[in-house]
Amino acid sequence: MSFFSKLSGSLKDLTEQVTNEVSKLTTKDNAGGAQPAAAAAHGQGNGHHAAGQHQHQQHGGLRFVQPAPESRAPFVGPFIKFVTTDLQANANRYSILVVVKPGSNDAPFLRMSLGGALGVPILLDQYADHKFWRIDVAVPLQPHPQQVMYSVNYGPDNVFHIPGRDEPYRWMFHSCNGFSSDVVEEEKAALNGIKPLWTDVMREHAKQPFHAQMGGGDQVYMDEVWNSATLKPWIENPNKEYKKTAPYTEEMNREVHKFYFDEYMKHFQLDGFREALAQIPFNFTWDDHDIFDGYGSYPEYLRCSPVMQNMFVAAQRFYLLFQHHTNLQLARQDGYLGVHGHSAVKQYGPYMAFVTVDVRTERTLTQICSPESWELVWQAIERLAPTTRHIIWGATIPLVWPRMMGEGAIEYAGTAMLKITSAMDGIASLVSGEKKSKEGRSEIVKLFQKSAVYTNVLNSLGEPELLDDLNDHWTAENHVAERTKAIERFQEISRRRGNCRVTFLSGDVHCCGVGKLYSSDPSLRSDETKDHRLMMQVVSSAIGNKAPPGAVITILHKSAAELDMDQHTKEAMVPLFLEDLAGQPLQDQYVYGARNWCRVTVPQSRPDSLMFEIMVEKVQGDPNGETKPYGVIVPGLAL
Image (cartoon, rainbow, N blue to C red; front, side, top):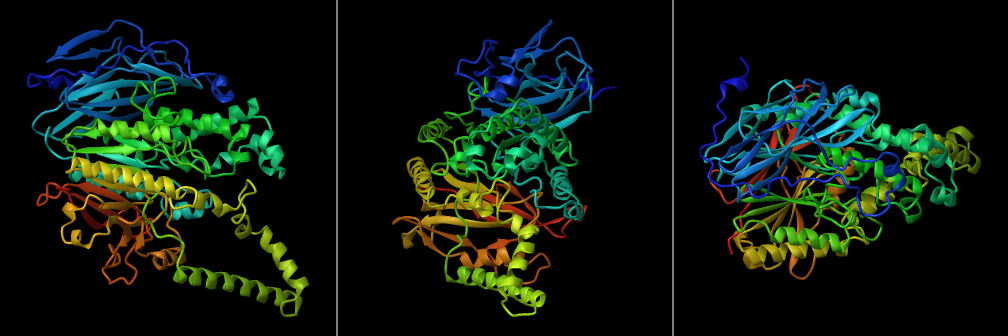
């Protein structure tokens, strides 16, 4: 007998009505102006509802819909996304995405042990005869925790968990869930792919369930899009004017769309990650690798070129579908914020909110997010429940992190470069038989230019490889003012609310650590609960990608210094790693170079605080994925 036939689904305890029932969607064309070439060539759905007869059930004001006819069509998924906690309706809202394989026009059939669908399935898009269906669901909150089982098209049962109405969320954070293009296949194999730490996540989930997962960017790595055959002539042509003006062809368009679709279909079905997507409701935001490495931080002639602009359209199309369960036509209606981007502010129960700011769509060399889009985010934060005690900003790239500055870092980096130069001179002398021979050195330089080392100095677009990374960071000269404004605005929110702590949670850097901002007033050091400027910066990266070389970690430590953000605020790194994975004392305690993810809970002894535990991989590539926790407590605010 099926699990579902054993459950009554009674919702008699529900007394309040869901006020934000999914509105009726139209099928009219988007009126937002002309679509770029890629969007025009691969038109997106406007949110068509499934046809057929549907039964409606009323439960304490919630109007659930049972879709008909029942379908058994094969599909990829399901992927469950957290939408919000509707405190007025006393319910949690989620969306479930399935990608139905070719051969079926039937809408997916959903069964749930608790709650139900708020409307009929919505056809978001179609690509290569695959149909993207979204089902909006709600589950009424209870005083006690709940386990919700669901299945789609009579497929396997999946379970997700909801805390009690007034209970805190237990959740996890991850970033950089794949591999950069410089990681060779042998290294990926030695690391056992991304599976080990997802094994650890799901093992923890089985012990004590997570209610949510947050993805801080680079959920997928799309850098290999540049290997597409139709893009080769554009990449290999050194002429900047050509790159700036060359047309984006239909052949490019087909190949690029196919690449992004195929990568998502493959990546979202990887062992461990696949199970997490079906069982731990997610909330994701993107970073550059979800598009391609460095997007938004290239010179204007590249960023505004027809090729890059239309590649972005393809990346955005599948990003919205797979990671947000929406499309360009429905995104604003679905609660995503921005003039052009897709930021979000989500309530997690009465006490926590999670903010994601789209730092890619509007990014240029001189801005990360437009002032108008920032204002929409601030307005949404103002609407958060007055009971909110913690606001977490999933900032993708750290706001507080060691800067490549200071005599120690410069001296160390300089020594490394001298060693490289010395080595080249030595090899040149061996080849030529003459110390520092110009001819010998010239030959070695030619060999060096053909090597992988040199190709990493200049990227495939003919720009310095490190330039996009340096321009990406909040502390880059062109972005530091925007960073300061954002931090000061969050400080003002904390000061005005009086009981709401702000914390930054980031990835990107492929290593982990904790920084903090805090008041310059020394009288507040003894009681951090009175410091509204105290904002911890937790960095957890990467759950998949390999860690940087030890030399980079050393430079980061030598760069760590207390700095003045402004006259009222200081910033510094926190000595979190007092011992290594084997329990031996560490001298460098700020940054750890190993794969990791982050577990977030509320300490029983300090219910107004949050505990962030960075779970560091003990043995690189071990299939068991065992980790060691390094924890920091973020205190509540009580002005």
